[in-house]
Image 1 (cartoon, rainbow, N blue to C red):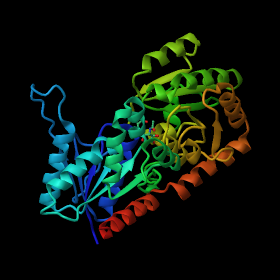
Image 2: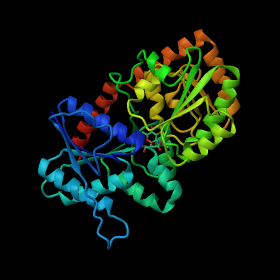
Image 3: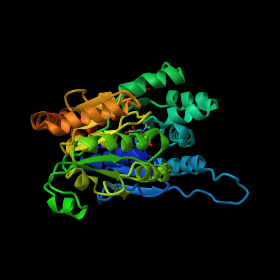
Image 4: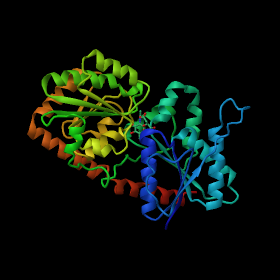
Length: 379
Ligand code: GMT
């Protein structure tokens, strides 16, 4: 049975937006009718499908409102689409505010679309929001409990949600995934030349939105030690609030000619194809989608022992796990890995195989499909 699915995500927000969009496209490829309901076209929605639609949420800018009521405009758009298109379900990414908007929309269409289901996927941001504003705990719990099925992107996030939100609702782990038709290693020698990277230099990469939690200065400090031992360049991809701090750190450590700031980039798979090692040293990370994209391109990773990172990187097999802030350990492990060809070859292959076996797009999309069908059987 083909389904009619409404998907809501923040269209411009990193990993969760990417996962929601790629899931929608893959479901469309399987013949389901997909309706994205969001404030703008999701940035990764770059293919056309006859059975995939986009419905824009127009947020009222009326000057009486100090804050534009995004969640209410969204609820009203979701209700409109659900009723007109007779959607089977909403799959929303984030409990706050999307599960709440879905709940409102469901109430609004109860008369004409009584079996409409809500699937909510938690990406970790709800928990971060809770850290800043504990008064939202009840609302997050409500969003979770009013959803028919709730998933989270790692086991660690499931546990953290139970700890902080105190709900009895079952939360299932559905890992993020990577599409191996897009993410695979290519030969790109000319790209290296364009970045002025010599053949005997190793390429270390970090990709993030440069928020404080990503600890990008730790990446730069680790690189400063690494490049004392081996010839290497650091590629910093992305942009965000800590960008200036990171630039300052690079200058202070005298690394200006060894570090390239690439800013926000599309086609990450191209840059990953010239990379030898990824560093993700975050203090909060429910999954770390960028690690998966790297591993699919045969790039081993070093990450912190935080959140879902150890579920993605298998310590000692596909890279290494280090304690938060232990820059010396990160650098030592990077030097060991990058100067031992046999170990490198083994880890690079293992990284690739891990994504293929565990985080494969078709496997995870099947998992979501089963969840959708199961939800329709629920009362
Ligand atoms: O990491 C961010 O700042 C963006 C955030 C988001 O909402 O997209 O990422 C979260 O969801 C991603 C997709 O599930 C995960 O890979 C990231 O680990 C998670 N970020 C955090 O938990 C900080």
